[in-house]
Image (cartoon, rainbow, N blue to C red; front, side, top):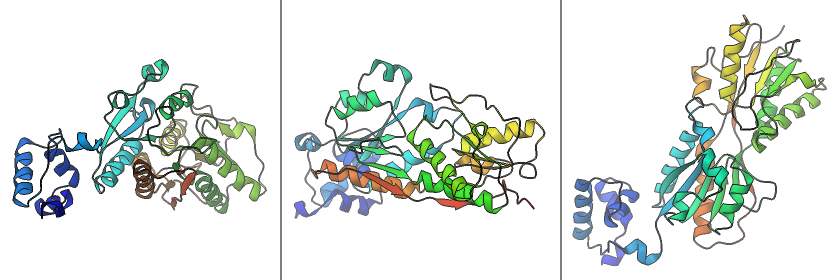
Length: 335
């Protein structure tokens, strides 16, 4: 019977995604006219009865909005959030949903106007990538739309969030440096810029305290201004033997700066990063870092949001996903 035929059945027959079938049957953009005809013909042959306005009648768009601040996906930054967005698309497609990315510019944030996908009611839920200004998040929360933070959490934990284990990640990085004989270890990152960087700083400090190593104020090096953009690194006069960087992007910048001053990496100074982004692989030497489990994080975030959209209540708190230490060539053992 027709009611027993689902979009997933049609997708399986044609070897396409459920999202493509949904878009074709509801006459939405995203599939070619040729594929739309093929999908509709297969649906008819299989006895699937549909209406081009089915989504509208059900009050569903099957679209999820993904919001990210412009500063996190600018040309000079890594492709980390693009990789995370790609993983979101894959995870959502398994449940028949599509993702719509909207980049929040400085002008939009300053004007405090809602993103277009919310104003035009194009999406059923929102996933945010990374930190977004508190006032702007408050405006989004006031819409009552199902919302999940990914790679960010607030102090109150009222909005469900999924983050990597930032604190333990930099703890094991710093611990690895200590086990290689390093005692003069600096941290690079604006510790008040984001909760993630603060947690990474705390992991670094925890390791130093555990190993009873001296903490030095000049070894905490800021990497960004109040606008969140990177600034020139001010290196201390008494150079450390190793640097723990809050991300691979800035680790790459630091390595180039050190090499420009005549230092050899890792023979003179060791450097570690965080994220296992493209910068970690393209750095010379290749960067020791912590790999973020993007797949598990996006799967958890999408799962939480879909449960909320289906009416499940009281979904709060923070899900923490562990990363993995990746040892490459940027650390030397001190004899």
